[in-house]
Length: 51
Image (cartoon, rainbow, N blue to C red):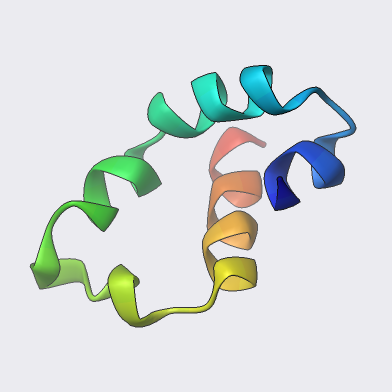
């Protein structure tokens, strides 16, 4: 929902966008440590990635 709010898009579109990012891939791998980061940090990463 944070991504949807940041981009002013609906939740379904935000979810589709999330799953298409490298950040999502990195969340699945413990070597990047993103699982320990805050939700806002993850959203900021995604926003930076899509810009």
